[in-house]
Length: 305
Image (cartoon, rainbow, N blue to C red):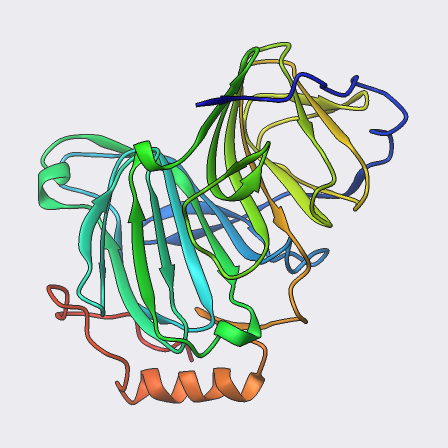
């Protein structure tokens, strides 16, 4: 456990003014029987660093016998980054991975040239009323890794660095931030962290990366005199020092990195620097050339028409 820097910027100072490039309001969509709020990609911004999809899942409450059911489906060219605040999801994939993810843990699944996975609520969890609340992001893989072999890694709570300061608790999920480095391996300069702030706490965000954003999961914050409520993705201009003041108890996700090596094509669950590669992935899924998910072979999500 480490401490945050003592040299917090002053709220409202000249360096923080006009630092926000975009304010993105997520749009709602349904996956697996419950609603998610998608902040990326948007009409204003495709990516922040490598992050190309950013979904808030829940908070959702499931009655006895019900749960999340995202059937087997394919990915190429991206890494799924799953992080929970409440609840549990059972992950299975075509590599043979099969395990639950719980709050404070990380699942990083790098699709590379192709992987299939499912995300469901286990029978044990369905046996009682339960909640689900978290974030699933997708990070585009650099061109050098788009066609690499797929991989899956799970990181427990104790593996992810914790950084504390006055009224601030930060868990570093990926990359480097506040002088700390996460053990999570990702092949592009980036950062991803959860920050929990008490009222009156000030969180600095220095311009260590060209692309940075903060997603307000809950609470209210102030940046340079402007107030922002939960459910907003604030994208910052490069080069500005940011000061985030918590006006209430707040939970934030900090994300960003260096610009990706070119734009990406996105279609359904496929991300690639090449449209031809996406077309090939479509044909492969339709022809059932992706590998099966052991233990979850009874159904799948068909290719959208």
